[in-house]
Image (cartoon, rainbow, N blue to C red; front, top):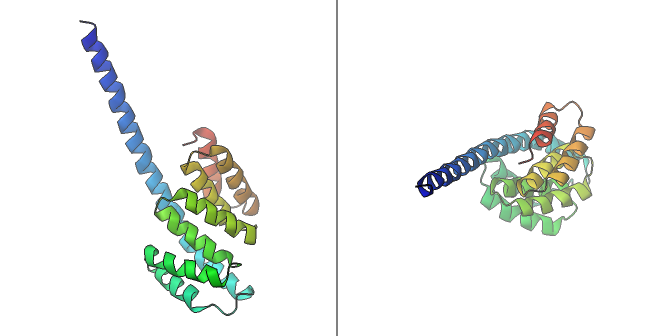
Length: 174
């Protein structure tokens, strides 16, 4: 007789865990979409900054990759960016774009690698630190996520999205 209530309790707990996990994934997907939109908005700024950078001659692969990226054809753009980075490994924009593509594909470790490379080349990028925070959190590295978002806030203290993300990380690391 005690077995039936125990089984029912176990099933209820399992059901709750499944529902909670799905809700978390849906919430995370919405945050990922917000991240991608944020990076796409920032991309216009980065492109104008690239005109100032020593990458004046944007080579063919990079230009083709940018066109595909703007059309959200990420798989094709990824191939072109990889070719572009072979010819110009000092361009942080390439690594930033690859990171966005990897975030879109939910390949968080690849995104982290690309973001770290972009930050080596351009440590003053708030958006790359913010994206690094998101990617680290997605693989369960909440400590690194908090450190990265703190850097993003330090670089861009007026950005409300960065502050909101920081508060979310403090309240409940995902």
